[in-house]
Image 1 (cartoon, rainbow, N blue to C red):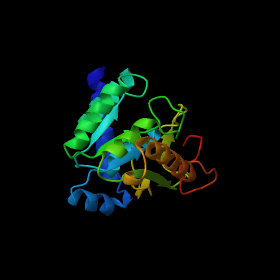
Image 2 (cartoon, one colour):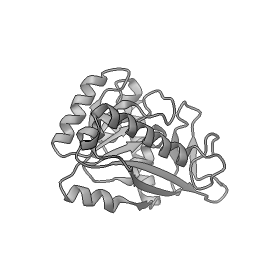
Image 3 (spheres, rainbow, N blue to C red):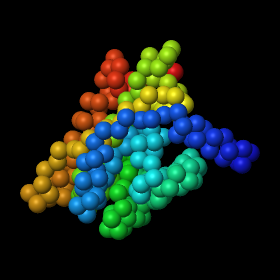
Image 4 (tube, helix red, strand yellow):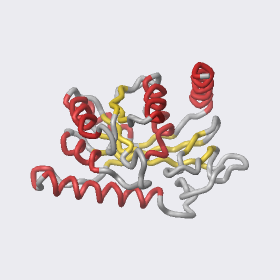
Length: 227
């Protein structure tokens, strides 16, 4: 059974790569920072994990995956996509995971964190993303994902699960747009770590809710429903 699931996932991913040409904006800003020797942090809403993987192919990055069975499944899948993995979450193994992420940052690896995982609340950032941002030399980029209408799917060709995060499963042929949006944050030299972390969490949540939390906005993913 495990082998069958593995084969189905690989076929599914191959179909996505063959049929989706995502429009990606802001990646040049990420590349500029990396060329300058800076290490960026990617803030990823939990429901957009698969969409984010489509936006950053064949590039080195370290991801955070929980220690749950679902996290193990996701970790194996993302490893096959070429990403490095750190296991842990805010509810289990958090301290060790945070130290491992900081170690990856020290080695110059961009880090991606699903900031509202592993159990929510949806779109509510946990402290770890801001602590990593304080430790990193680069910016924090919020990854914003939009699905355009396709055929008889006015809200995008995908399946939205009825899970806590309303997880999005893109379907082959969907029209995906992704923006690497750099957060506007204060200089670290003018604030204590606690102040900077608190400000960063507020800024990240405000930007996230503004983009994903507006009902009726056809260009962003809605609050609920399924395709």
